[in-house]
Length: 450
Ligand SMILES: Nc1ncnc2c1ncn2[C@@H]1O[C@H](COP(=O)(O)OP(=O)(O)OP(=O)(O)O)[C@@H](O)[C@H]1O
Ligand SMILES: [Mg+2]
Image (tube, rainbow, N blue to C red; front, top):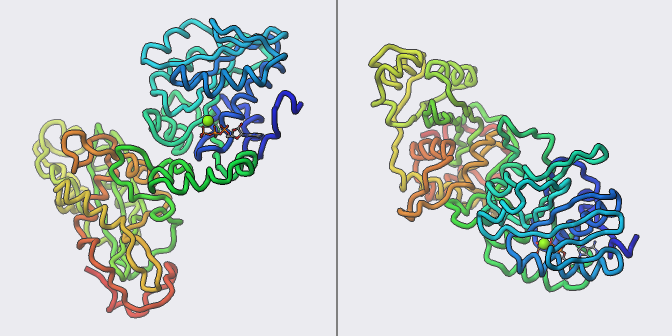
């Protein structure tokens, strides 16, 4: 077996070998042993199932040659024959591993009409979503003893970052995708004893990278990528487990209205030091204004909410279209909400100052005990906000602004934080004591409550 494997798989590689999911991704940190596992899995499948047709891809030919053709030629010497013109390894049992690449957008079409029971995408984030979708159409078989599968290896970053993150990290699916089909196995350099022993300096090289690259390549953090607007955002620092919010904390809401686009409502609470905690989100689409208002009120039952800031254009939008969404012709959206019992205040919509306000709140500030904490954190149940905040990108034309896109939750956050004082000021540390979110403030009156 060792002759075939050329090594012993580590725990994560074993999981990769055992996965029978329709789509299995092995990704994260550099050097975890992902490419090794992909090559070995392909050879094991080719040997186990006679006449199996496998396709292994990298984005460019030089990468393919370096990463797979050369090592496989060495490893399969005497086991399979290699045809360099076709770039195919043929096994005595009839199985074949085809090695391919998709350099230009059109290159995928060379696989049109072909059938591969197994498709492997090495460095999947180097492929576009369209290329991935097309390749999925070639992943099929008529045989009964094998279900078609796709395997992916990947590091954070590059053109395919968003689709890999959506399918395997955020697990957000559309109607045609079955969540049970997608399995993600996280890779860590520390799992790869072979490399750690042979080259201990490699970890030091990764540690010496600039922070965002280090987070992506050493820690396998999917929340950092090139062009990212909020590099300050980190799940570790900004996303927390829900806790019971003390009654004395001031609460408020913010809303980015949308009907055809999603509508996002966020609930926030402010502690005695001026730190903001976003504790709930409502994220809906095609929902009438009066129904959104009803849902917001229902979710807020038993809570005392000081105010709700909302998209300022809700005071302009009126007309027949609105009549169909629960009100009379001519009523503005703000009036519709008011009629449904939810009073709104127009939010400050200065985009760049608003994004800067978020940046200030993301920054770490002294916690009064020699440590640091950000001025804003959100509960882990605010999944759309957590997904969209790190995905925001710089606008290509106005480098200070964020590009328009899937930003409904960040917009709601921007409105919310613009209703608060600057986050750059030092927190109001009332009393030096261990921070315990479950404890109630000792003297309500001295707590910050603007
Ligand atoms: N189980 C193993 N046994 C022996 N050697 C291994 C094993 N796993 C990985 N290696 C070796 O460790 C090194 C790094 O592995 P590999 O290239 O597969 O990592 P990777 O996760 O693909 O890295 P990158 O993110 O840079 O693409 C390679 O030299 C590989 O041959
Ligand atoms: Mg690799």
